[in-house]
Image (cartoon, rainbow, N blue to C red; front, side):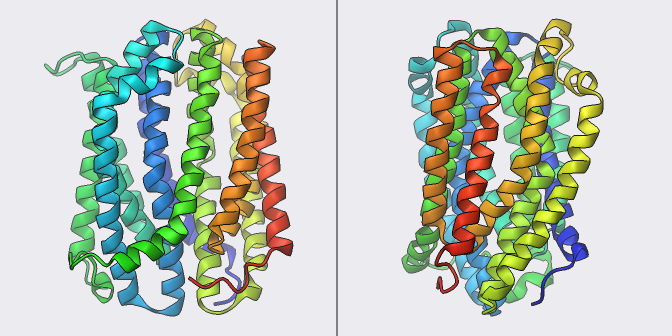
Length: 442
C-alpha cells in the first residue's frame, strides 16, 4: 500500500456519501413533512429522533470497531478472519438491539418525561419513539454490513441499499403522515412507521447481494457457526470504547436539545430544522471520516505505520475542498434551503441566523473530524473516548450557560459547535503527533 491518490479516496468515499445522503433523506423527510403538520410535531420528532439515535449509536459505535478490525484483517489478507468477525458481530449486536428495543418500547415514556417542559411535545415524542425504536434491530444489522463493505473498501452496494431505504421512506412517510391512497392519516406516528419499513427493505437487499455475489465467498460470511466468545471479546476490546464514545456524543446532543426545549417550542422547532441541515451538509465530511479510518487501519495491518500521517494529511486536504464546495453552495441561498423543511415564514426567518452559524461550524468540523477518525483508525479507541469525554463536558457546560442561565438567542446556543469541533481537533492532533499508537496490535 502507498499513499492513496485523490481518485482512490473518491472511489471509496462517493458510495458512502450516497449511502449517508440516503440515510439523511429519512431524517429530512420527517422534518420536511412534519414541518407542515405543526411546530409541536416538528420539535417532538427531534426529541424522539435524538433519543432513538442515541440508542442507535450503541450499534454504530460497535460497528465502527468492527470496521477497524476488518480493515486491519484486510491489510493482513486474513479473509476468513473477516468472516468470523462479521458473523459474531451479528450475534452480539442482534441480542443487544433486541434488549434495547424491549426496554425503550415499554419504558420509553418514563425516560422522556423527566426532561420535558411541554406536555404537548412529550406526548408527540412518545408516539414517535414507540414506533421508531422497532427499526433498531434492522438498522443494527445493516450497520454490520456497512462495516464489512467499508472495511474491505467495496462500498458500491451501500449506496444502492440506502437509495432503496430513502425511496421507500419518502413514499411511505408522505402516505402515512398525511393519509393518502386510502391509508390512515397517522401524523408523527406515520413518520416513524415509514422509517422502520424502509430500514427493513434496505437490510433485505444487503442480505440478498451478500449471499449471491461469488466475490464474497472467500470471507465465508453468514455461515452461522457457533458463537466464538473470544472474537466477540476482542471486538468489544476495540468497539467498547467507541460505543461509549458515540452514546456520550449523541446523549450530549439529546441534552443539548433538552436545554433548548426549555427555551420554548419555537426555539426547538428552529433547532430541528438546523439539525437536519447540519446532518445533510456534513455528509461529505462523514464519508471521508470512514475513508480515513479504513485507510489508516489497513496501512497498519500491512505493517506501514509511516504512511498513517501522510494518509491523514491527504484526506484532510480532500475534506477541505469538499467542505468548501458544500458550504459555498449552501451560503448562497439560506431561505431556499430552509424552505425545504417548513412553509411557515416566521419559523423560516427565525432559523436564518442559526443557519449561518452552523455553516461556519461545519467547515471546521469537516477538517477536525478527519483527525479524530485518524485516531480511531489506529485502534486506540480508549484515547478517542477520553477526547470525546473532555470535549462533551466543555460543550454541554457552555450550552447550559448560554441557553438556560443566560437565556440568549438560539443562534448563540449553536455557537457551541465551534467549541466541540476545535477542541476535538486539537486533542486529536496532539495524539497523532506525539502519542504512542504505532505499535498497537489488535
